[in-house]
Length: 332
Image (tube, one colour):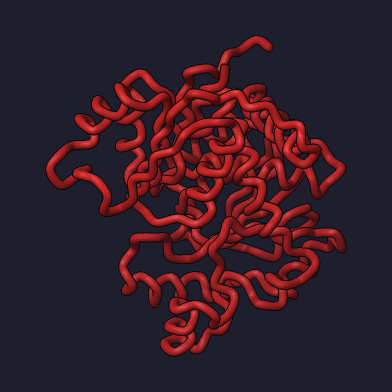
C-alpha cells in the first residue's frame, strides 16, 4: 500500500486520492464481513474519542458510537448544548484542550472552516457533516452502490436530483470526479453547484476519466443511470421561510415513479441519505402538507417504499464506513 492514513484527518474527499478512497471502501467491506461472521478484531483498544455535535443526529452519532465500541474505543459525546464551545470558549481553544485528552475528534456542525481548525492540533479529526461537505455519508453511499451493482465504481452512473449546492450534491460530485464515475446533476439554474467547486471537479474528472453533467433537464439526466439520489430540499439549520422558495424552485424535481421509469433501466435503485420527507408521519411532514398540500416532498411515498429503494442499506453502511475511517486513521 503506497500510502499511510494513520493520524490523517478525514475532513473532505478532496484531500484524498482515488486509491485512498477505494481502500477505505474495501476496508469497510472487510470489517462489515468480520462483524457479520463474529470474528471482528478490536484495533482501537485504549483509545478515547470525542464526538462534538453542534447539529443533532441519528445516523452519524449512532454510527460513530457503535463503530468505536465495536473496535474497543471509549466515547465521550458533547451535544449542541453540552459545552462552552462558542459561548465562553472558541473552537480553537477547545481544540487545544481536547487534543490533549482524546486520541481523535469527530465534529458535526456548520462551517467547514470549523472542522478544518479542529484538524490543526495533532490528533485525527473526522468530519461528521458540515454545511459544505458530508464525506462519511459518501463513503457509505459508494459502498452501497458496490453492493447493489455488479459494475466497478468507475463504470457506475448516477444522478443527483434537487439542490445542487447542498453538502450531499457537492460531496457526491467530488467523490465521483475522483473515482472516475459518471455523475449527473439535475437542478434549476439557481440551485446548481458554485462555479469554483465545479471547475475543480471538472479538472479532477478530466484527469480521472469521469463524466460530469450538470443541467436542469431531469428526464435527460437520469437516462441509463444505475442510481437516482436525492436529499431534503431544506438543510438542517436553514430558516422555515426557505421552504416556500425551495418548493417553488424544486416542486417539479420530486423523484416519483415516472422519473424512475425515465431511466430506461428496470434495475435502477433509489438512494437518499435520510431523513426523508416522503409522507406526513413527521412533524415537518405534517407542517409542509398543511402549508403546501404536499404529501411527499423530494421523493414520493411510492418510490421511497418500493423494492428499488435501498436507503436503509445506506444508513446501515454508515457504521461500517465510519469504522473503516476510525481504524485506518487511529488503529494500531
